[in-house]
Image (cartoon, rainbow, N blue to C red; front, side, top):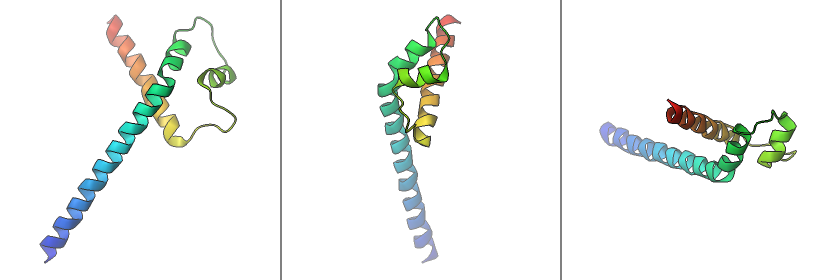
Length: 89
């Protein structure tokens, strides 16, 4: 009986982990589609920008971003920088 309960709990945990991973992947793709071209423009701009100007270019209003959006924008930014390093290595 204890093994059956343990097995069911393990299955529930596996499905929960898969759900969270799928959710993170969808969030990253959503942010990538929305901000990737804007981030590229900011990265390769010849002029330095202030934080306010970057927020305007990204289309971030006064409300700001949710914490998961900040994490995903950072991930997209790091992926773009990593691609650039590989390209010029």
